[in-house]
Amino acid sequence: MNSRLVPAHIATIGEELCIAWQDGVENFFPFEVLRRNCPCAVCQGEADVMGSVERPERSFTPSSFLLKTVRNVGGYALQPLWADGHETGLFSYNYLRELGSRLSNATP
Image 1: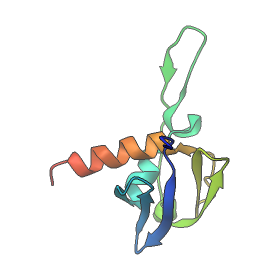
Image 2: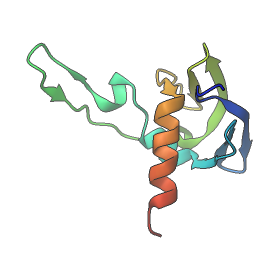
Image 3: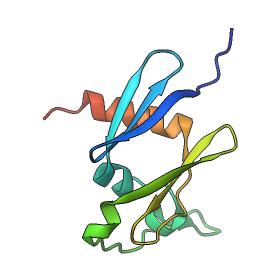
């Protein structure tokens, strides 16, 4: 039995990235939510040698939330390419599944 987390289908529908996982779970990520949760060091900061994380200030424009395309990275992540040129975020499948779980459990 394959317990590795793998998307069966990836598509954009309207302003959402949709992932159907091999285990039957489906997640829908609004582009803005995906971009605001970008895990890269440019967006989230990175730890210094003492472990302190300096969070950068981020500003967004309307093009920050326009998804141009999504690349597969190896067998473990997706890399969104945004209309404003941002492309350093690697969204691991595990991170996406966790984010999808948080979104589906959020109250409106």
